[in-house]
Length: 559
Image (cartoon, rainbow, N blue to C red):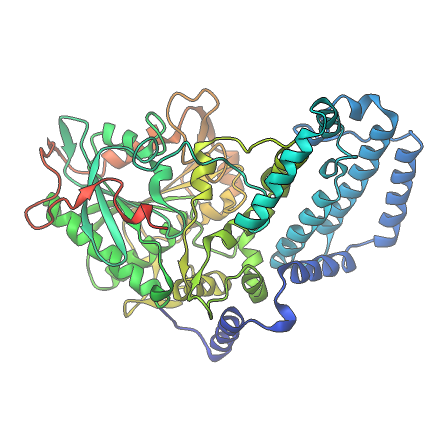
């Protein structure tokens, strides 16, 4: 990948990569840089002196028993009856909540740009949640009572858990007990075969479950970060299983977990691998075209490849779906954290020593984006209560991290920092400039209402980037919840709306809410673009691309 920008942008990019690879000693610590953004936010918060006085009065009211502050609905930290019935605990919680809310509102009201605000939110979240009395034994009545009830054994078990996490989990509390989940046995177990493998990826073809299939196959382009089996989590909760049941020929990319020797794999490397995958799928199925769905970072890769194919006059992509994948980075999002080069250095994203980004470092950053749910909740459970973490398949998948090659990391950072995918001819992939507006394929774009990584308004912007007809669906749930969203879930819902336009909020105002999963709506849309029906193949692969091994393959198991 190369960028087609002026010298100023090129210098900025080179400076960013220098930080990533070499790491400035003055800017190595993420907390320091995020704290700097928090200080900037507080300095630019209007009426800060008046706010400080109001906070002092709120704390005084709490201490003297006159406060009316209550925890927000759904805040599980203060559910123990002691927080209401015991005067000391009640005063303590109210004083803390006053401080927490004051920090949050100060950041939200500050006169700063959105990337700085994202970093300030990051620091404020860590600071405010870390101050919670529930993170201490004395300040947590549930843990204190449990220690007495177990004659102190809960604290002994908690100490053992802490020691194990310091030794084996980089000091982060474990979120899940993954031992019951075995890839290929009770997760990622839908029948299929690896029908193509090169150095970068495997292509899995899944066994048809219907007597007839559509002639245009479906390729699901999974993210280059994490493993693909979240799409095939369990029977009746598998997107792959559902797509097969709709009469689609389903193929999925399974990316190799790069090692230090693969540090030079860049966006062009992955783009060429994806093209090789589509070549194999077309040969196997006899179809000139392939339908696609790009998910998370896989959507960015798919978009770049589609632009390259358009530039060379190749119309092999019949249609494209994009799930919680942000292509236009101008919409405020958590990537604002990435717009400061030192954050990546602090998260061990520099690649000088290993040539790769350790997925555990990425996972730690994402955990600290939701500290109450993904850090302190486990801290209390594992250490103060002395309990084992839960057994949960989604959390087990989330804990099954992969590495990212250093070159790809730098390319993705460039895309985020300079919004290159949304800039016509802002970058070059495989020797051709990327212009998404020239791509004529129809697109189906999915956002998620409570996505903390890709705000739905950011996903919506994808509808404005391509030249073909675009459909937008707003799913209930978050970044992963919307993917594991099978029909039959009584809590599931999604929104359909009018023809997409520039204003996401106007689309929302004119949208209709439907109970159920967006999978049904997508399947109808995809089938209409997937050609005629024909008998399902009796064997997987072809003479040229014979089955190599059973799904889920080798690469998904590599550590």
